[in-house]
Image 1 (cartoon, chains in turn brown, green):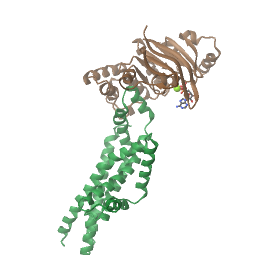
Image 2 (spheres, chains in turn green, purple):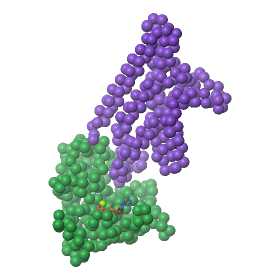
Image 3 (spheres, protein in one colour):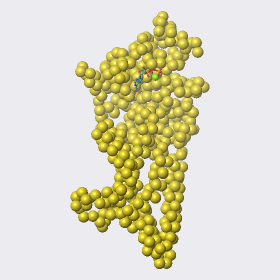
Image 4 (cartoon, helix red, strand yellow):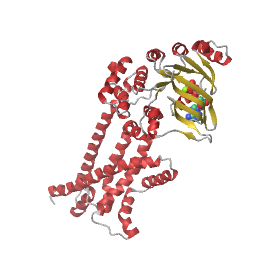
Length: 254
Length: 216
Ligand SMILES: Nc1ncnc2c1ncn2[C@@H]1O[C@H](COP(=O)(O)OP(=O)(O)OP(=O)(O)O)[C@@H](O)[C@H]1O
Ligand SMILES: [Mg+2]
């Protein structure tokens, strides 16, 4: 299987305080990896490093076997610029916790603007694909609506469609349902599940334990900036490991 | 002087006032954006210089600034002034002054944008420039429109400060006629003119605001 993403010995600090300590992980084509762990364990930071929203302080990141970011022995970070940067960016997409849709664009424009403006693809083709995506998301009737007219669940589905429209090799989710009311969570999880059936490579940070267990090929349990446990869902969830028992215990109690 | 002659002279002044108004906006709105970039720049020297410029422009009377722009080239460099420079000095003075106010308005608007908008655009592959002009700026315009409207309405009234350079706009002419003919009527006409002018501006800005109210 081809490796889509590789992160080797990643370190990240904020103001001299290291929050990611030497984390390595890789994601294969078609694989679904969920990252779970207590608040503040560094899940978002790791995802933001992978998507270049944060710069790493150590290690290297590879997409499709190409080096996308690394640090020199003297500690200098290297991030390729120009065409190379553009190419690397085209490999991944990210779905945010709070959607970050563009409020001044209609639903369809949110989805089509980047493929047309950035990828310079033909308008008709992009629009047709966008409509297919909207149909898949169950939002065909919302094409001309503006984000402010949608529910949180609908917004998140538009955000997923927007990310998919660029045909990324891998899609990251950072707590895609945490900003949603419980009754809207289900519809978004269902959409993500449907992407799993299409074998789209995904890395999902989530607090939805049942969902993670159900959908993932592999689970990473993060704690205090390190990978504390990694493996198949059943191995991780049923592991005889103090920290994860403690962590899962909190969920079972609520 | 008959009322119609008076009106004719005054309407010549109105057109000149309008000219100052339009040209000031044409120059100060884009200039203000550039100044706001400099004000938010990573370069601390540029930031400090811009900050000083803005506080000078906002901290001294516009009338004084007009006089400095007009007489400065003579007193500083011994250059000949007068003729067409009078009008140019007015536009330069107004544009520099209003750019400072607009810069602060732009800055407040740009800084109020949630960081998520930049991050989403970044992830989708927009370049910094594309992100600014396609995603950020249109939303900033909507946010700052009320503050811009205030400035624009002030500008309508401020055009009358051109009398300090004896430029024959509405207010200067009204004053001249009033003095020569010992009549109060030109001032009434001037008041009506400024009021109607502002009414039109207010309606125009409200229309734009309505146009942008399709979201959020
Ligand atoms: N921009 C930042 N500046 C300083 N510290 C930060 C920054 N972002 C994150 N941190 C710190 O890094 C650590 C990891 O945070 P992170 O947001 O990655 O955790 P998380 O696992 O995503 O938590 P949650 O489940 O609450 O989302 C925390 O201690 C946090 O305070
Ligand atoms: Mg987080």
